[in-house]
Length: 259
Ligand SMILES: C[S@@+](CC[C@H](N)C(=O)[O-])C[C@H]1O[C@@H](n2cnc3c(N)ncnc32)[C@H](O)[C@@H]1O
Image 1: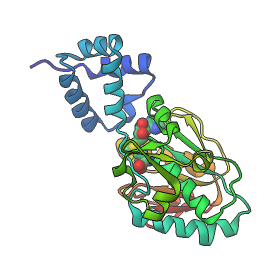
Image 2: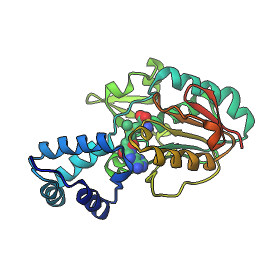
Image 3: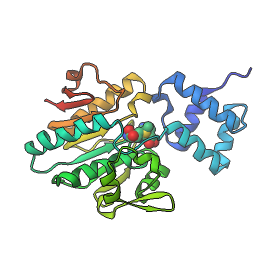
C-alpha cells in the first residue's frame, strides 16, 4: 500500500488554493482527503493535486468536501430560540443599535435566520449583518437567496410564507431580508477580525480545527466583541473555561463578553 504524502499535499494546497489544512484536525482530515481522492480516481496525493489543478469539477468537489458546508435555517431550533430571547430581552436593551457577524456562514441560512429575527422584532442594526466564509462558491450561492425545502424545516410556517416565494420546488428569499446581509470572503484562521461586534455567531466550524487554532479563534472573537456582547457557538462547541477568553456562559452555547 502506498503511503500518502500529506505534508507535500498540505503545502501544495496552501500554495495553490490558499487553504491551511494543517489547522484542521489531523485524523479526520486525512480520512476525508483519502475518501475524496479515491472518488476522483487518484492513487497518490501528487496525482490528486495534478487532477485538482487541471479539472475544475474535481477542484470544486475537493473544496466542497473539505470545507463541509451543511447548514439550515435556525439550526438547533431550541438553541436559536434561546438566543433570540436573549437578543430581544437583554442585548437590545443594553445597546441602541447592534452589529452582527455570522462567521463561517455557508450558504447563508444562518445570517438570513438572524436577519429574520432582526425583522421580527424590529431590532436596530448599526450596519448590515456581516456574513463571511472561506468558500467563494458557497458565498455566491448564499447571495442568490434560493433554498431547498429541507433547509427551511425549522422556519415557522407563517414566516415561510411571509419571507419566501416558492418557485420550481425552491424557495426564494424576500429581498428585504436579503438586503440586511453583506457577504464577504474571510478565513477565520489567517484573516484579521473586525472589532466592535455586539453579536458573533460562529457555529459548526471550530469542531474541525485543532485545539490551538480553536483557542486562537475564540480569543480573537472575544477581542472583537464589545463588553456585554454575545458569542453563539454550535451545539457541540462548548467553550471550556470561557473566563480564559474574558467570556462567561449565559445559556447553552451562548457566551457573554465580560472584560
Ligand atoms: C458546517 S458549515 C457551518 C455553517 C453554519 N455556521 C451552520 O452552523 O449551519 C461550516 C462552514 O465553515 C466554512 N469554513 C471552513 N473553514 C473555514 C475557515 N478557515 N474560515 C472561514 N470559514 C471556514 C465552510 O466553508 C463551511 O461553509
